[in-house]
Image 1 (cartoon, rainbow, N blue to C red):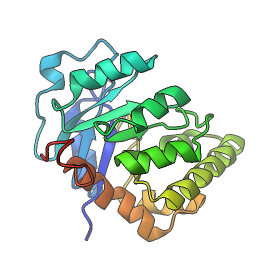
Image 2: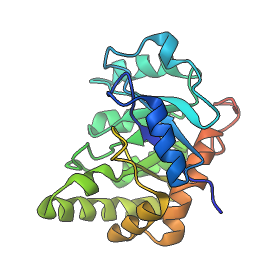
Image 3: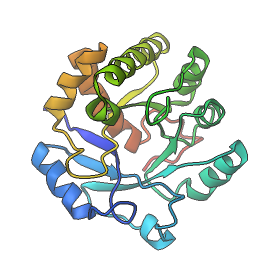
Length: 228
C-alpha cells in the first residue's frame, strides 16, 4: 500500500481552519502526511510559527508569492533551509521560469495560475526536469469549476501532462485545500486524474512516491541541497 501525501494544504492562520482539523480529515482519508504550505505574504504568519514543526504527520512548508524575480530570489534565500518544503506560487511566466531554474525550490504550485488560464512551455518543463522541481497538478480548479471552464482546465492539464511525460519531469498531485471540504481521499483523486489522461500508476506515483521524494530531497544533488 503506497504512502499518500498532499503537499499543498492551507490552514490557520492563513485560513480559519485549524491545522488539527485538516490533520484529522487527512488521516481519516488515509494520507500518510500533509504539508501546511501557507503563503508567506499574507501578513498572518509570524516567523516563529512558520518555522515551528507541527507533527510527524504534518510538515511545515511555505508557498512563496512574489511579484518580481528579485523579490522571489530574496524570499527563497530567506526561507531556504528553514522548512522541509519550499513551494512557489506560479502562473506568471517570468516567475515560473525563475522558480524552475532554482534547484532550491521543491514545488511549483499553480504553474498555469489558480484558474489555469496561463501556459507552461516545453522550455519551462525542461528546467523543471533539470532542477528536480515538481510540477503541480492542482485538483481544486477541477472540483470548483463549472462545465465550460472544467473542459478548458482538463485540456490544459492534459497538455501539461504531455510535456511532463516528454521531458520526464516530476508530476505531483495536490489539493490546494483551504477547508476540510477541499480535501479528497486518494482513491477519489486517482480516479479524477483519469479525466485529463493520467494513468492510474502515474496518479499513484504523483500522490505517493513523488511527494515523499520531494520531502526527502531524493532528486536533489547533495552538493546543492542538504538531505533531511
